[in-house]
Image 1: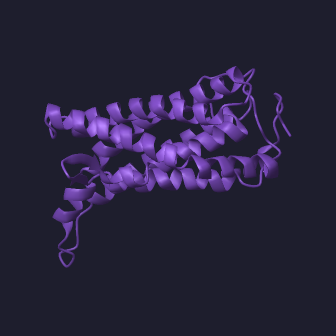
Image 2 (image 1 turned 120 degrees about the vertical axis):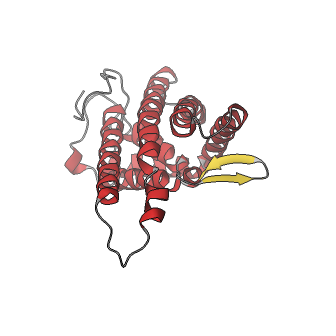
Length: 234
């Protein structure tokens, strides 16, 4: 099993493409769902909270099994897909609607808000995911690959806090009051962290399965942690 610096070539990895596809899909769906604010029992959150915690779980799996460079490639892939999505929704919204359709206002009300949501999400996502991946990779070295539960939860607490704060401030400033914004941030951060904890048994099994099947258990000992690369080489 690969515990050193050398990595298998991407073409030899059986499951990486499936995980990155799931990662990007969860991100895209979450951002579309995030246009709806939800209030349950006085608790305010957005529709993206239903699926978005899985984005961080997929990110954890990528970093733990394949290493920071592969996680970084997935993060930028998600960014690219979301950027194309917002361009497409914006262009379609500006094109003249057919008189027979009659739903232009509905489209604008929902997906017209989408660019602001995506801007918020992309900025928050980049900061949060890179913090999460960096902390997880460095803690793996510090703990010698042990205490996985501490590493997973610790990196998520930091990454999700940064993500939630940035997202809330950009997406809902001027829409939510100060108290509602604080409620939104605390509830969102807590909920996403709790989901990570609840999902730990499944995350453990997925990581164990992938390490065995991919023959990968990468330690980022000589990794260049700059986020501004697409290559999986360090």
